[in-house]
Image (cartoon, rainbow, N blue to C red; front, side, top):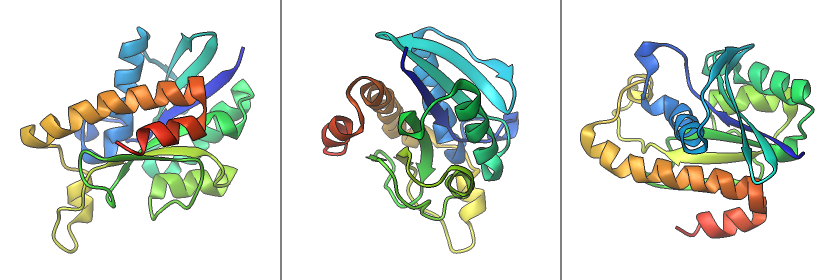
Length: 187
């Protein structure tokens, strides 16, 4: 059975729940709910195991804190013997407006500490789904902004994008990166 590791980046703890920086966790939660599975507290993160049309998915929400996300990703790739071509990391992205998402097959970390740590440990040839959170903050206010919660108005924009991100993840698993990029990056 083909195995996939789907990682939603974020930080553990109530103070980070549904903050902009935890967009990845929000997508992971929605994906798990959609597939009818729940998370268990395991090594380096919360893990939900699901199947999708004959494929095995490990949905991971690392509990290493964002800046050490690579530890969890590397551990679960090695433990389950999953190739990096079958890894998809979902992450918040300041450079994209709220309501936009972009799938890429590889690339730089774009200054994102979570992606940076993953890249240090496994390289940069893995898929990432960037969820736009906008960059609507004053100079020097980035940390407070990314660790802040979405307003109700922002959630109205974000929630349909989270649903779309879940469909994008499923397409990545079922159809592959190229077809999925062509389909979802045009929206």
